[in-house]
Length: 174
Length: 150
Image (cartoon, rainbow over all chains, first blue to last red; front, side, top):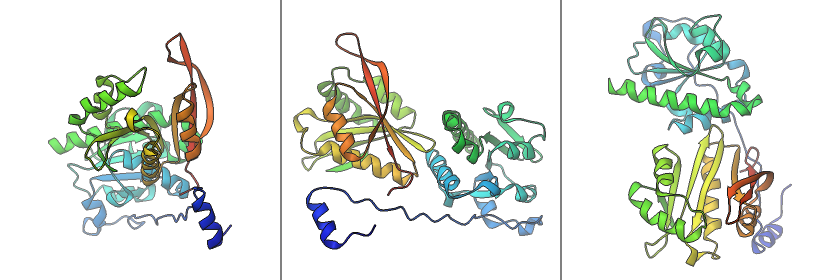
């Protein structure tokens, strides 16, 4: 409901805050192209970012993006400082030289694509893995959609983020 | 009033306010542990460069848990608590939190009024959560939904 200026000033005089609907716009996925490419073609952002965030594009909606923003902020990152990679783009990572890069993989499918098609989140959470020919350090956590549907797992996801942060710090000290 | 991140050298002054303002204050170790754990903590300074309040927030994924908020007793009742709370709400919004939660003693009507006026709602009660002068005291769990508001 749009309020007239007279109504707004009356509310202001009474000290009543006026809330406005959030104007949310989902940021377009900043990802690389969808085909297997040669080293020379590897996306510039993948080369520059230390953090690669592996998500399921099918479930990456506005709510999931907000959750991801919140999760990244906990470890001092933002959507602008990471490279978001979808499952389909994993082959591009084979070409990366990645001493200090870390993959934060969200969801069971991501874990299976990176580690083992039969693995489960329970089996691979809470520790780091070397993936993609042992070039990339990987930390696995819950899928964004799964976390939205099961908020009781937030504490465990928070622990995963702390592990990822610590791991990245250790990579930087090598 | 200005704010800045709480630093180790602030803790002695913060603990002095904490002890003056609370019957069951946090210890110095509690504050040190919070900073060590990376929780977000701010102190608030008035025009006389006096530390007049502080707050500590833990981010748990997309929730902001308000762990402590306090105003120097001699300066309470002047709207400083509300300003600090507004700072917390703005921070939570800035990091895309969808919910702010806090616990408050059932007997602390003044704090509950502050939170209610700021838009918090009672979510549940934790029976006998806090130590009290005589026995235990319930905690009121309050929350503010930020998922669709700015």
